[in-house]
Image 1 (tube, rainbow, N blue to C red):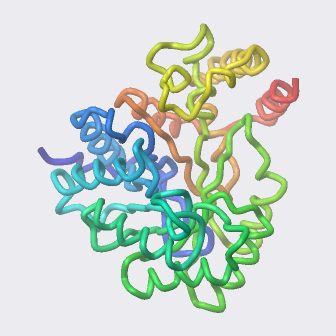
Image 2: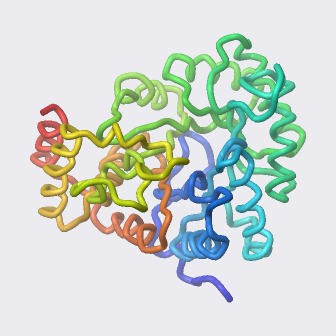
Length: 328
């Protein structure tokens, strides 16, 4: 079955910092919905529909699943069966930084761990290289020079094209960019949590990223489903909050948050959008944010999210209203 030949006609692609890399405004995160409990046909349908809609970036990490490693294995099977002749149109990313195996070499940011993890990831994915390889979190006990040196080795060995960091604050991002420039390492992106209800990067990472020419890709832009209409009437049985493997705890779906979400939903409806669509476009309102990383579990969710690009503009009154709701 062939892919949509017009897949690049409507998707917006944004330059990643000062680099030559462009990413789709909406990227696909292959985390909870690609573990062992995921249905193979649904995983295949999701990734095929992504590509048909112009989403060329599939994001993973060594520990995605559950269990860790299973998401890479499952995506690797889909890449082999469905995308064999389209590898050069795809941006595949993975990461290393969280616990993967016992002992002192299976976690954090040593050169030993980072490079061993990448080899394991490539084997699970069935690929010779990834397009972006991230260090997933700052290791407080390992020098930044060592962790960045490991990323540099991965690029020089041809196992990654670009390097990235994830969950690094603005100050550390500036430090590692200085190291990267000395190494001539193409460090192009920082992946960080960012949404209407998690805005801490605005005063730190976003200004630094602009200054040093680094792109930002926002994960959890929908706050793991909170910024949708899913929880306005309680916790659905098929939601992340109800999933024992899910990363959204039911305790996070509290009365105060849901009250704000309800008001945001009313504003979105006045804009002619769903709350999810408005929340995605709000994250992308800043030119420093290259892409919003979604985690759809159903094709219809994916289609709804991409349709948000049809209305990206906000008025100053809308921005003010959103700020008032979030501050309430």
